Image 1 (cartoon, rainbow, N blue to C red):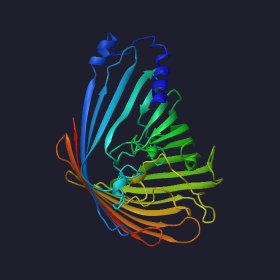
Image 2 (image 1 turned 90 degrees about the horizontal axis):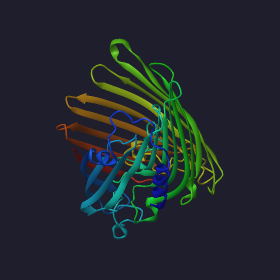
Image 3 (image 1 turned 90 degrees about the vertical axis):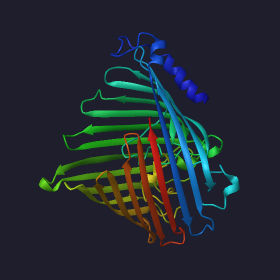
Image 4 (image 1 turned 180 degrees about the vertical axis):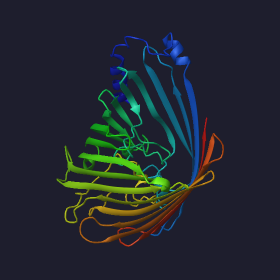
Length: 408
């Protein structure tokens, strides 16, 4: 909290915008009272059946999220967001020591409690450049390297300063300096907060109407978890082209390299690669085939490509068996099918996991989901994952979710 307050205090030293922006309130009091409030309620049942754990996890959790965005005054505006997570059925281990009496259950990483999820000030330094100071959500590209872990009930947010700018022609630039990472386990355990000295630089360059290239550099000095101290440089190319009456082909290609920095106890270099092709047809069916590889070294423990700030649940299967990259690295070959049937969005994904370094199969996974909006304010999601292991390092697991969301 001290570092967050320091960041907000530094923001106060900036001069007010020389010309009031359109829509500015006439006074600070008017800006505060003319804002907009939001309420989000998310209730979720999660069941986990894991072969090596006798008990099955049954978790029924509900998150109440309250937020408020002020109006602007001399360009300045503020946003605050508060979460409280309730346990309605608590036969599960919420992870990282947050439920020490529930070690007989599989992990469902949704610890109960309250959290100041976001608290920041926005300042438009110019028409093209904006600054954000404080605790904030940061989502870069597809969140493979930097994200908010939005699937979990307690989101991951960051204490820092972010600059976004479109001042360079055809370029969306974002730079963030991060002092603390507020992780999904809350503030009651050591794993819930990481003290870091982190720089995140991301620049999306529009090549033409269909294609963009995003080079990036992420430097993470993690004083609490030395193994997370890494420097990652890479680039992501995305785009597509029309396939006539047959819809559209989309492509994403990404390459990155990573090395140890700062206090990391292991000296290593590792590579990342992704090729993702999908075909969106006119009839609402989308088919995709992708290959993702995170490098490793079968002979050097800890020398694998790491993604400590990622939204990990979105990658390498919803069963979350590979939240930490195996020492041998991992190759993930996966096929996706999506279909819109009326108001329902249906998704199926098949994964085949193997070692990147040396030989070995880790297993396969089949994921399914079906979701729809019930009304403008309410939605429902059914989701499941079945992981079948081919390695003694991993056990078979089945997960099921039912989630209701309300937004006001």
